[in-house]
Length: 531
Image 1 (cartoon, rainbow, N blue to C red):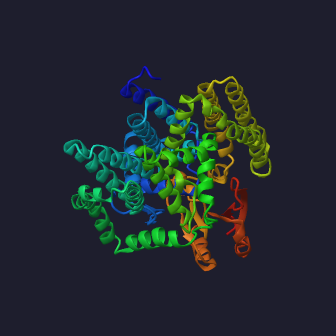
Image 2: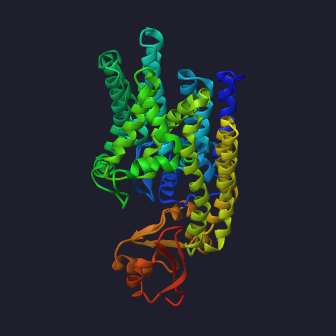
Image 3: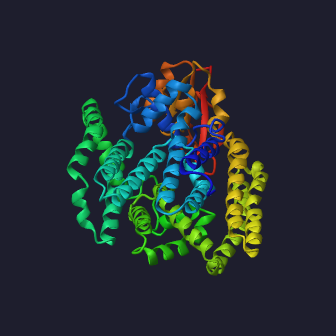
């Protein structure tokens, strides 16, 4: 590792990260609600040559700003409309995030810390999932990481006017792109973490040297043209929906049932960064003790504290909300393990954490088996849980190496077990499980020219794979009128509305399929030829 220069290391890491993150992305349907809506929204904008107004199913979509739609549209133009094209931007954002974190650790600590930090991220199955999804979060994570790294590089070079100026402008550029990705949350997280860091260092006066006014102007130049254009084009509807519903309301109260106790947010981080998160309590304690001597540790702590703390108090709590903290949490773990490698007297301190992980690793295959076995949709695929035996095998190998005072190989055993699991899961098991979803099981029953109507609720993936709008009826009267107009009709709904649909004698049930790992059941009905 030490023989590689920074540039060569970035190339090697970039290629490996891209190959790992892209595995299986062309085999998985855009089935999840968020993926399907984002990919379809980008497709509609692409087909209508519309770069301003986001639409889903030909209706205004106010969930997010457009940058990830624009990337998907560009990918559709270059490679055609497909699952891989929709996810390509997320994969590249993941690669970029890993490379930025590696660069940050190399420049501000040492190459070994950089490699350990990268391994922490690459081993995380949650990172593997997040940067495979056609959603805006990967883009936001990348731009936030770029802004944070740029801020710290500016801070380090504050006495070198020209070099520090370049970094501060790059930070404002990243913030502007972050605002075009997910709105003002980019400004909030970077502003709070940067302010906390300067406060901890008793250097709040540096705020006066940050070119705040020119920076704000640059952000406005990047973002205002689109925000004003979409506001005008939609008569203010997009602005109201995004800022009031998807920002203010989402923070004040749980949306779509995604709430929970405030401690659930740090728990997400511990789960998301397994296996190396077992060392996180020790890493945080070590960094806190050294925060005054090592400014880079103080900065990483500031970022982690702000991201986790902010979303702990948010009404809506989602697993993906904590991912922006992962690069800097991974750095804290990497710095801690690097210190342990340097001081053999500290090796014994890892023993309790490794024992905890061994217990978890033994339980994980059982948990995955039961998760598959207890779901009636995929219970016949429960044997695929065998691939998670890599966890206890990796834990045993790590313990063996640890007992023989080979900490480097202990780290590699932990990393290798999770990377092998990711390859087996995303390339082999998950595509087979994914094919059991109700959209995959029912889409072939709908004719290419057949009229499709949804009653109240339906999976948005139908719109993407049918490549045409699905008319949604909210009342029995509206559905009755539609059935009278169209001679050949397919109706998509859910079993929870069967009591209302039973009134329609002309409808015959074709098939019903339950969602993967969830309770809603999709039902497909067709109009009888007799009517």
